Amino acid sequence: MVLDASLATDVGLVRTSNQDRGLAGPVLCAVADGMGGHQGGEVAAQTAVDALEKSFADQGGREGLERAVREANRAVWERSLADESLRGMGTTMTAAAAVTRDGVARLVGVNVGDSRAYLLHNDGLERLTADHTLVAEMVRSGQISASEAAVHPRRHILTRALGVEADVEVDVWELVAEAGMRLVLCSDGLVNEVGEDEITSVLRQAPTAQAAAAALVEAARTNGGSDNITVVVADVREAAPAGAGGTETEASASPPRDAGPDQAGLPSANNPVEDGLATAAAPAPSEPAMPASPPRRRRARGSRTVTLKVVLFVLLLGLVLGGAVAAVVIYNNSSYFVTLQSGRVVIKQGRPTGLLWMHPRTVQKTSLTTATVLRSSLPELRTGVQEPSLAAARHFVRNLAEEYKALPIVPRGTVALPTTTTTTTVGG
Ligand code: MG
Image (cartoon, rainbow, N blue to C red; front, side, top):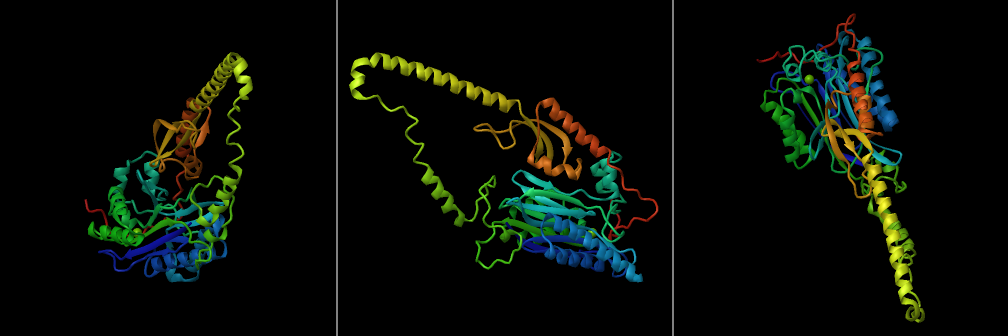
């Protein structure tokens, strides 16, 4: 898979400089929202994006991306130590990359700060990142509501940023990439002005990634543009067939994988081989399953006993098949799994991938969302966590909620936490 990615950025209507930076490549995309006086914000964001790109070019994949964001942190941190005028600068960093692992195309993302990543689904917009802000922590711990957070005067205070310490804690998300997915990375200048419903409809209407990114930036300007606005929209596409001159590193590095569970259409060059094998193997098991009709000379003599035997055989076969079907239904209905649906944690009955003709059925929608469970739980939730009973599934959901509540709020004592570059206050 490769990304057809496009970047749009704008200073907005209030700020005098644009301290956001972005990157939109066929494999790696990023948004960084810098902060710090003088040129600090711009330097921090640019330094981080440059370091991320360079490090990821040296080592790709999920590990490479995690390493790259740490390298970016270190680059900003060291630069701020080296230059008095840049002391205290920092930046957010939300990045995503198309990678291949175990023969499966995936999107992997990292996040530090309050820039965000979203994925557009048929049934809505899924947020892939949690904000590392004071108000987001207050919402998670139940002190304030999400709507109070949206207008909270301290909503720009970050609890994590790149470049303010020698090392940084990084959130990582990962999902299986499918052609047609539309991914969005953005700075808070977008989401503070444009609601998720409006973002969704703009994304649905825009025919290309470029048009979508431009339209989102325009919407933020129309709604006030009180901060710098940066949007990267990336459409997931099949990699061009080998030899078509593609320069993508990750995606083209793994052409001949085994058929495996990856049902996304492989480049058609692979299919003739599979088809050839299938047709070669097909003739063998076609007819013999049907009992050959008895020789004609015997039918004349004992047709009655033959008929009786056939009837008994069919009855027995029916019993066996019926029993097998019943066993499969019972097995399916006694299986439960916890997964995500439109950003919400739900309990489903059945098997995550379906079983024969039976598709999983939602039995309970919980109050948990991707924003109220630990980031580390999201990958397994996306694939579906299987539980042997409904009670066990509910127990698992309760544990998810408890784990999240137990999440320690980032201590904010000794070091004054940096704020984003936004200086405008709430209008009302
Ligand atoms: Mg901002």
